[in-house]
Image (cartoon, rainbow, N blue to C red; front, side):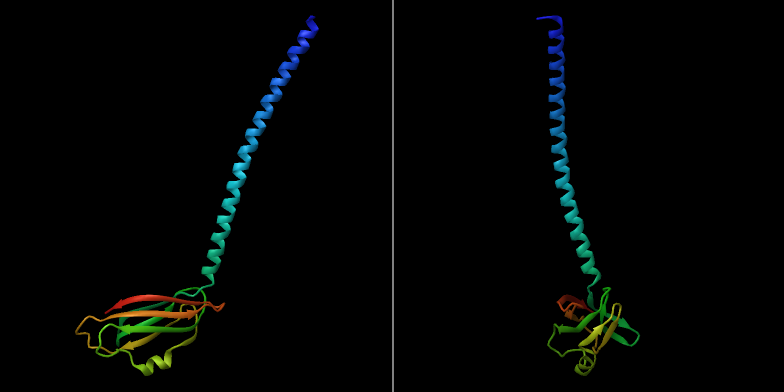
Amino acid sequence: MSRYEALTLLASVVALAISVTSIIRSRRTEAKQLVLQVEQTRLAELQRSILERQEQQRNQADVRVYASETTDGFRFFITNLGPADARNVYAYITYRLDDGFPVDDNEIASKLPVAVMRAGEEISLRIASDLSKQMEFQAKAVWETVDGKKQSAQFELSL
């Protein structure tokens, strides 16, 4: 084998080694890019679901019932804390003792159901009681969202 043939063979072997190294590195890079692409797709789906959930929450009412003392006695308050309107709002209030219900039926009939309760709006029902004993109530607020879905929430109240 002549000197030129040996140099040509050596140059070919070096070129082959460089090519193999390049192919191996390209495959590793491609595998890493594939993993990153899968992760990026997963993160994009998560971000989309978070944005959808936030959009739904932005468009929902949040009706709450609570009891509190005011200057003219105790009252139940029904309020919409959400950013959207609530429709057909009604509150079912259950008194745990058997000695009468402390809210006048006429007042309930005149104020409930509320056709549309705007965001931040509140209504109250006066509680007639002797407060010589602690009173406990269960309340359930029922309403419809702007798109017609029925929602409800339950509350434990005491005075």
